Image (cartoon, rainbow, N blue to C red; front, side, top):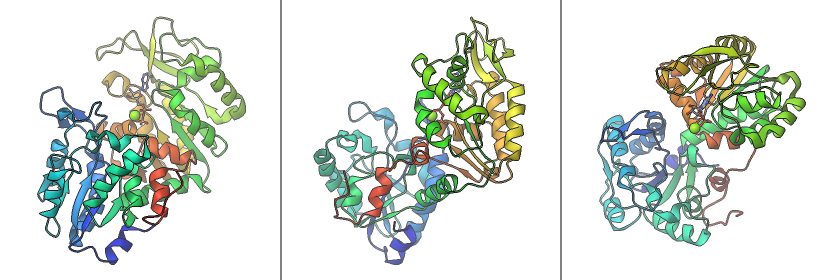
Length: 407
Ligand code: ADP
Ligand code: MG
């Protein structure tokens, strides 16, 4: 895989470089003007962009925001992102009105060395995410036509076979951006001979989303600590009543099998914070994980569980954490996530946080980001990488431009 440094040393001054960045940040649209609630991904994109700007490249950034349903959706315009990016870079960032159409071409032609142009939300073009390689390819031709080389720095999108991630790399000389490289390096340390004890903490809402990664990691870890909404399907698999908590009935058997296979390597909560409803002024109660009342929902792990998980984390030399331990977005249910985030921050060894909501939780709960070895920008991408899957956006960077990659 060619690095950004390789590309830059070949000379990029005066040339147009198309950079796929991951600027898919959470937006609060409740007050009219969209407000970026967590700009972590924009900040993570800066090193690659700055390196290219300094090297005198004419930078064209392509990125997506959300999932526009039917083409153009003004509420998902990249306008707020371009404003924030300009602030962080300390220079003007132009925004095209189309994705790879006449306005993009005109604005790309007008760039001078070190300028930055952001293309409008690439998912406004249905071809971007099409399953049809010809449709994607035709769109990738337009994107590739804007530039002389391509840098993929959108780690959060490398698991997608999308035009701006995959097909465009087949058409231009390309390199991996610094963010993609650092993400891959860290994830490799988690999969190749991690220092032990190796402890993984998983939470979040859907157990079905995380089963593949549980299967892949179980043989490698010393402990797998499970909290969040997904713990209830495991508790149900042990025969406990979980009341109104999140439950995926069709996964109970699978979870039972995993518990059998894992023995004491899977650690489940011993106590749970429950409430009647998911509201900010809820009446809280801490109950045994084995006795959740029928009319209550489990919305966070309890204090004894935080202590027990913390004990495991204290001994760990390698930790990967994905998925909040409770509904941290509401203050009454944030303590479990805060406690685990703190324990992971205190790990004496490699500590990696993966997952969009987990990374947002770290920042929202005011933890010191620098206390972690690495906070991944990619949720799905980091999980799929840990599962050992081949990710299209990475595989294609190993191919040379013009060469057909395996479909
Ligand atoms: P990540 O983005 O870090 O991979 P997920 O998307 O899997 O994490 O899960 C995040 C969501 O899980 C959060 O919005 C949080 O509110 C929710 N969650 C955590 N615990 C529970 C629970 N006990 N009940 C319902 N939802 C939960
Ligand atoms: Mg998420």
